[in-house]
Image (cartoon, rainbow, N blue to C red; front, side, top):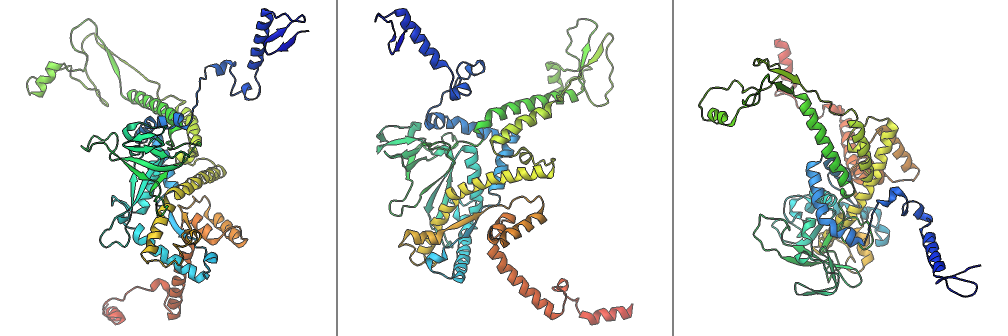
Length: 550
């Protein structure tokens, strides 16, 4: 019997055989090739249909950051020129942000030892103060959008480019009670100085750094400590500014609060920059666009009455219906008469041909009969990758009620996750910075705010409500909401936010005002529908006189 060892096969007499060694090596190689586990399927190297799948995956930097520049350009190009890409991004923006996420303060009255009345009064005051800042374009460093317009722009930009940035600065403006300003920064402007990443410690623009990847600086532990922001877009040719970079620390040294907001969704550990949401489907979208253009062109040509003129003999005259260059020049300069060959095809046009000439027509078979089926099949894959049901993407609900409701519910879950991430990355940090300024200026009374982090959190906890869920059957959904509230599965505030996107406490206060007004009208004995109607000059007496004269 042969005994297998690491060096090969050993004969019984201890003599090594080179042939046996080669056989043993071949046997071990064969064993290593034998599939096991995932190598039976996705990791197989010997299956014919997998041999052509050459793949290489590195770290997040090699796979993501090194490809971001081209991904951003193609994503923006798709948004500007491919209708389905535009529809996808705008559908996400409308259903996640809509008119803007509205704050709903959630003060922890138990921790702060406040009564429910005091909590409600303080929350109402906070909303009034916040509206002074958020409803004005003064909150925008560019002074273009209010806070809710900034939300729309920041979200759309992060989806299109992979991420978006915002800096929080202070700037005094006349007649404005708050100095906080939000400046949105496009993703391209956050980049490494001289467009060169540094992965080892060294100097960058005269400053010692540990690591910079795509403008994001980290320390030796991998913690993000600063962002490098270019003074202009890398591809901007409309300004004469020399390219320069400014280092902005991620957190304030004294306050520890954020100075730069980075809006993105990470896919991998160690990832520093976000990926455009269209990135996984860019190739498919481009192919579908080219296919649609080809079918459209073919259909357009087929819609035109196309003819070929067969001449009876060889001639050096120009093609039938085509004007030669010298004749065209004569016509443009006003010289010469109309060439009899200068003919145009048109609807119902009848023309004479020369002797020996005949006309052949060409018929096309476009658009292809399977065009809609093929496009829908591919778009289903695209919509699934982007977590947008295809009927939501196309705004075409021709399926049954159950399917439409299921698609909307699934889409709502995706929107809810995106909404929470965006509120955490953008809305809440801005709100906390504003709240801090409001307390510091004495416009909001919050005892102990600057003394204890737990107290600050108890004051600044806030929920951000977005657009209401699409109602397929409003009556049933309202009944279900009432039952959930009655059985303690939900609260009136949560159900109001989901059904209408409003604020329950604000609605109740308004309802009290309306109920009191209705009560007064009822006690006066005048029907509510007649309130506010004014009598004509002279009142009833003039009307009576008019009747008598008639």
